[in-house]
Amino acid sequence: MFNALDVDRWVSARRSSLDEAKASAAGIIQAVRDGGDGALLAMARKHEPDLTSVRVTDEEVEAAYNDVEDRLIESLIEAEARITRFHELQKERSLWLEEVEPGIVLGVKTTPLDRVGLYVPGRRAAYPSTALMNAVPAKVAGVPEMCACSPPPILPLTLVALDIAGVSEIYRIGGAQAVAAMALGTETIRPVQKIVGPGNVYVTAAKMMLREHAEIDFPAGPSEIGILADSTANPVFIAIDILAQAEHDPDAACVLVTTDKSLPGRVNKEIVRLFATAPRKDIIEKALRQSGYVIAPDMDEAITAMNEIAPEHLSIQAGDPLTVLNAVRHAGSIFVGPYTPVAAGDYASGTNHVLPTAGYAKTYSGLNVSHFCKTSTVQIIDRRGLEAIGDTIEAIADAEGLSAHAESVRIRRSYK
Image 1: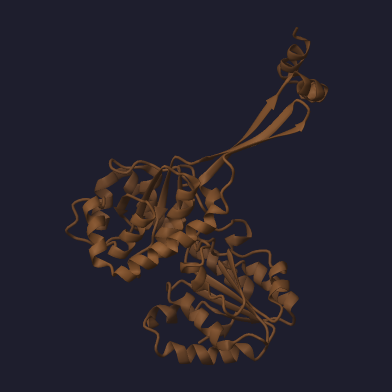
Image 2: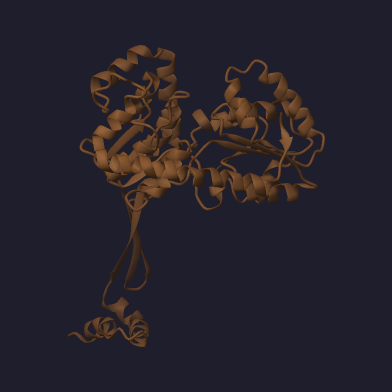
């Protein structure tokens, strides 16, 4: 059920699935570009035949609360508060200025984006947690307009989560067409500056293809976990973490890298035992086909292999976890120790679960407040400061043949 794998081939396969999805995504994007709201409604009616509008009304959101248990509403409110608390720690000052030398003040002004689009997956399961993860950092950043898209039918739990997070503009659109609608705009949906949120390979492909119209957070496709473990690891904990990741999606993947030759066999035994009572067997079984393990001669080699994988989620279950943590270079979110399941970050610890997949953690960070901001550098220079750097500016400008640049300084320095 859980077999040995080759790291290079595994990483290549994760990337190639995105490339294969681009042809289908391109056709959907063109349909939205040509057909606008009509195309969106036609696609949505495949899942909700009686739909007359892709926009969710305020009345529908209000009614959703009646269909969600009070305990779940309270849990979402608590989770939202924890996520907000963590993301508040990331918030930059709106403006800082510092006199770096007499007469020269430099700084940075941080400004939130005006309008962003949030993609919330659905259909296979409800993901109210992703609604919170997308919206909370945008709200903390100060983004004034957020619109959200989720595949129809949107479950009441997701609508409630979006409302708790402060999103009032919600559309029943899923897949690549949702990304196209938010990036290009339609008669009903105004285009956004940036699109964030995870999705299947078609959603991810569309995000990457439409970056000239709207910036994205990063490629965030089917979920994955990497587990770094030694002989001290508990095979039961590893097995249930693997199943927890595999139940997301048939394209999810799980990789165990270990220095203990006996651990994969013990983990596999527990996977078989736990799988017997798992509700989402079909999904898990497909995900496990692209999952497996690697045995490394020592922890240094294990870490090297995991850095090559650059997993979305990394679980460290080793005798000296902080040493391993310090050596890790590439991972979306890191879970240290046997009592830190990935589910903690998925729901309620406060960290964000929207993360780069398919090895993109080598170059991208997980979703955070800075994704929803842009910065402008600021300089305030008086005559004294300009005199201090004037010769340098003039010399370099003259050398580049940009005489007006040099003259813009000379005139000021000679002005009485």
